[in-house]
Length: 264
Image 1: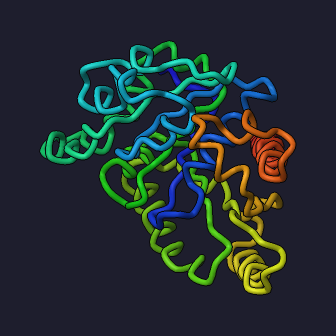
Image 2 (image 1 turned 180 degrees about the horizontal axis):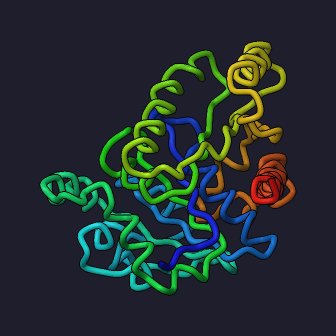
C-alpha cells in the first residue's frame, strides 16, 4: 500500500469560512519549511487551482479524471510556482460526478483507491484535500481517504452552527468506512481583534472543542484576500503580512501536533 505520511481533508460545509484560503496557504507554508505537499482540489469551483495560478485551459487532467478512474494521481498532479507544492486541479466536470459514480459500490472510496494505488503518492509528506462547501459525495470521498479532518471556522456569530453536523459526519465515516479518521484540529479564521463578538466566538469555540482548537488564529487580512486574484498564495504575494505569518505559525503547529501524536 502506497500512501503519503499524512492525508488531511480541509472541510466545512459552510461557505465563506476561509477553507480554500487555509488549504492553499497551509500547503504553501508546509512546502516553505521543507515538506513535499500535494493539494487535491475537489471543489468544482476550482478556487484552490485558481489561487495557485493554474489556468483553466491548463487543467487537461483533473480530479474528475482520478475519481472516474481515467487517470492516476501522478498523471493529474501539476507543479505550481511554489517549490515542493503540486496540485491536482479541479474542473467544472466535477459537478456531474455524483451521477456518474453514484451506482458504484465503491463510490465513496474512489479517491482513497486512487491515492493508494499510485506508488508516486508516497513521495509526498502531506496531501491536503480541499472540499466543496457541502457534505456531498466529494466530501465523503475526501474523508474516506484521509487520516484527519482540519476544520476552518470563521470567527462570526454562527460559527458553531453546522459544526456539530460536520462532526457527526466524521463520526459516521469513522464508524462505517474509515476507522482511522480523526479531527486534525479546528482553525479559527477571519479574526478581527477589535470586534468583541469575534473574541467571544473564540472563547466559545475553545470552551466547546477544547484542545481540538489550534492556538494559531488566522486574522482577517486584506493581503490574504487579494492574493488569489493574482494567482498566488498569500505567502508568495506578501510574506510579511499578518495573514502569511499566521499560516506559517499554523504549519509549525500542525507538524508539532503530529509529532506529539505519534510520540504518544
